[in-house]
Length: 320
Ligand SMILES: [Zn+2]
Ligand SMILES: [Zn+2]
Image (cartoon, rainbow, N blue to C red):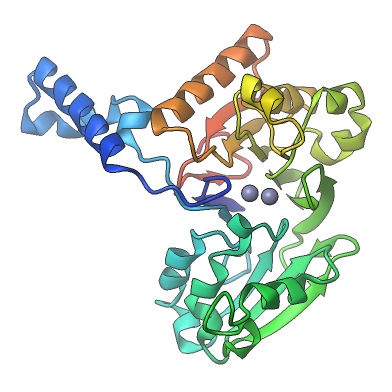
């Protein structure tokens, strides 16, 4: 299975500001001048740039795809703003002809996880089938409410695609044998992690979760679910200090994310749901601090990764 991160920003869309862009540019040019860069060296120069200068981490809110074997289209997890451009891509294929079938798992219905849905073009094409999955029994009502005419011009159920709602009470299995399980997370209003397992390999999406020291003292609540997962994309919105200041806000520090992943013997940890107030440089600093924290524990795993738009992982391989 291939996991691709489409949107990695927490809470609210966060476009890159001119000041931050200009600062990146200034630093890149300063490096180029200092190295006497010539045209043939551009590619290697770019590859050697620090992460925050080489990439834009991205301001789109949460969405992620999981491509399974024997499925023509990837499964979607969450419908943050990132699904607008993803929907445009889908329109180039079967979805543009009204022959698309899309399976969508929603972790919860906070704005940043559903606000892309009104702008998801495949939903407007007759013949397309959208399957929504959630342990929430009233998911359909919530999505209808988001698009009442007080908030959006087109009612959700008036969009032309077929919609099917699957109320999850246990595991779901897809044609290639992949099983999807869920686990409740601590978050205001509730949230669910999803775990995709096939042939002994597993991927878990666990954002909008406040993991704390209590989870380390009582690991049995989560151990069976997270144990030895190949890849966990986990909420790591805050620094440790900020997580104390924002106790009960429903998010986790990168330090605690590493602690939990280490406790549960996760192989690869991806830090996501980046705080909107943090610059790319700050997010990279947190990422490097997370690696240092893991190293101070003198353990090799989890490998720590920083979520950015477009980052993809093939499960069964440690390399992104
Ligand atoms: Zn969120
Ligand atoms: Zn939330």
